Image (cartoon, rainbow, N blue to C red; front, side, top):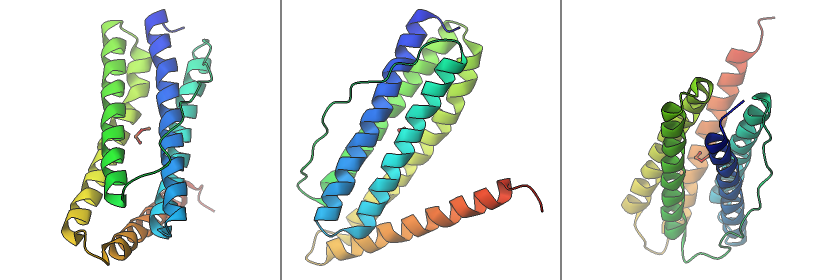
Length: 180
Ligand code: OFO
């Protein structure tokens, strides 16, 4: 079992991860509409990842003999001024999630919930990596600038990131596969 305060906070986090998934889905759809294929693929993938983050907590809560609650998800923004604005919003979203994970971890430590403390370590690493990735994208966008052809080059850069991530995932799957 998990103490009531921490359980409530974990259920809130399920809602935050679900919201992130929908925020990124809305961004993917907007990028698709704008013809930014590389960015759209990036956000469809991010949206799927956030759903996995949500499910991980949901399964953990139930495994701990508690009840994980399916959240109500607020409507995300569906229109954006520019791709630069989109990535700035992503960074703010990830910082918000990092702060929420830190609060959860502090609560787990205060209430001596060692299992949850251990469970949350994966999220700490994930958030550090996600924030670093988005910062690197924002740096690239700044270098490319806002001129007429910048959208084309930004989209190409994001496509490269998608390919690198796919290659890393394939390599990780191969490493996990049992030897023949
Ligand atoms: Fe699950 O929020 Fe970041 O990745």
